[in-house]
Amino acid sequence: MTNADSDSGSRGGSLPSTGDPAPDAARAALERTCRVCGCTDRKACPGGCEWVSPAVDVCSSCWKPDPNALAAELRQFMRDQGDVIVQLPIAELLTLIGAIQLACRHPLFSGPARQRVEQGIRQMVRQLPEYLVHFRAIAAQGWNPRHDSEHGPTP
Ligand SMILES: [Zn+2]
Ligand SMILES: [Zn+2]
Image 1: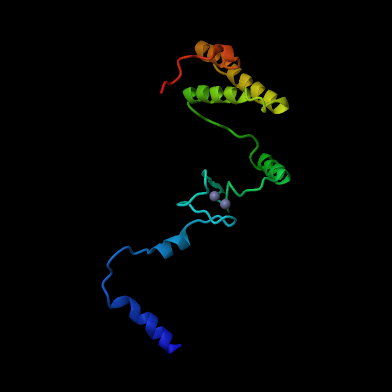
Image 2 (image 1 turned 45 degrees about the vertical axis):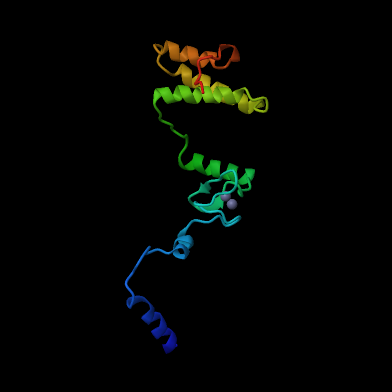
C-alpha cells in the first residue's frame, strides 16, 4: 500500500508537461457513448445518427419506438404545458408549408393523419392577414403539383 502510494506520487512532478493535458483515454472516458451500440459524437453510426434526448444515452439508430410510452409522454405534456407554441419568421413559414405540402404528396402519407396536416396548414394560413395575397395564393397552389414552379434551384 505504501509502495503504491509512493509510485503514483512520484509519477507526475519530475518531468515537465510536454503536450495535450487531456490524453485520448481521458477524453474518450468523457465522451458521450450510446449504451446500445457504443457510437460516440466523434464516431456516429453508418449513415448518421443523433442522440434521441439529452436525458438518455441512446442514439437514434438504436432507439426502439414504444407507442404506449409516446402516448404517456404526450398526455403528460398536455397536462403540464398544453399546446406547443411555435414562433418563426413569415418567410420560413412559407418554406415550411411547401415542405409539408411536398410530404403530403407521398403515396404512403394518407388517411386521417394526412387530412389533419392539410387542415392544420389551411387553418394556419386563414389566420394570416388578408393583405398577404401572394403568400396565401402560393400556399393554396402548393397542394396541387400542376402549379409547381420550374424556377427552382438549378445545379
Ligand atoms: Zn446506438
Ligand atoms: Zn449511433
